[in-house]
Image (tube, rainbow, N blue to C red; front, side):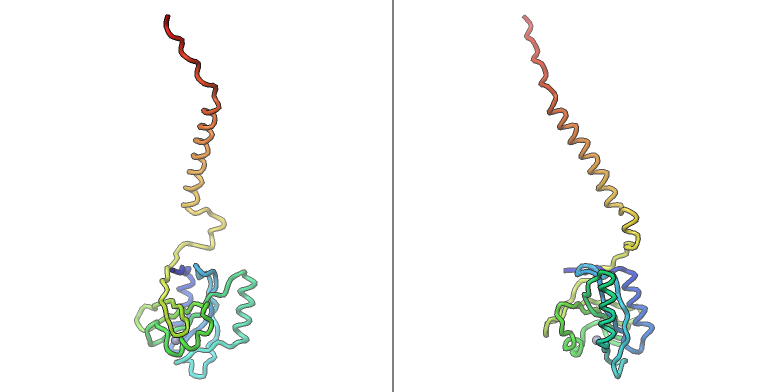
Length: 181
Ligand SMILES: [Zn+2]
């Protein structure tokens, strides 16, 4: 299984992590199970935000209401590791109580922020392939993608050929050629 993420959303999450460092940043992920199309940054309410993250239940509820209004599904949680690799800590694994939610971790350990997606189910932690989606999703309703344009042209040619085949079948049979006496 692979999950796509809009590049702008990945960038937004990385920027949020960078702006909160040395504290951990956190937020929720929305879209569909195959595609992360939105990230909502939330406050880190932990007592030691440089080592933990905690989302206030009230703030989470507000964010979920906003998602509902957008018609988006809540699919996961993200947080940052300012100084550690993007691997769930023992605490992260314990905190991931809802197994249906994906866990995205952004690490600032190296110069370039690194994003990694996980599925945490009890004590089993599975990495999920994350595919960056550079397509401009905002314009997809206004402009047909190149693939769709090609598909429409092919469908047009196919229907002309089909019409031709049907009309040929409907033609009366060719007259028999009389034999020469
Ligand atoms: Zn963590």
